Length: 156
Image (cartoon, rainbow, N blue to C red; front, side):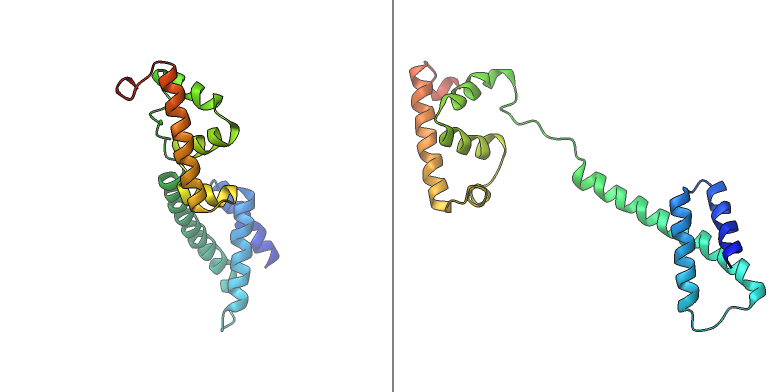
């Protein structure tokens, strides 16, 4: 049986399967053979191993391909640009950075990093109400700083 296993691994590798995948498939076949309720006659073991290896690899290939499609759809999306990532909002980013560290952090997490209020509260170990009040006060400070620079709500 060990000799058949080497032959099956060689066959799969000649078919384009990596050595590690071929070894995994053969190992799965050995486990499958041990779990069978009926013993396979000696003259049919080789054919069984080849047939099972091919089927097992095709199933694994289909599953891995489907898994990669799901990953591409869900996790490898092209990131959407934030409206603040354009040159016309550079002044806003600069003013946020001039605010006290705590205020700048809250505004950055909420507006630039798109965290929700509850996520910010969990991240900073604050209560939700503390985050809401902090965001309100940070917005007021930013608004005041922007007005002093000559920016008004209409021209931002």
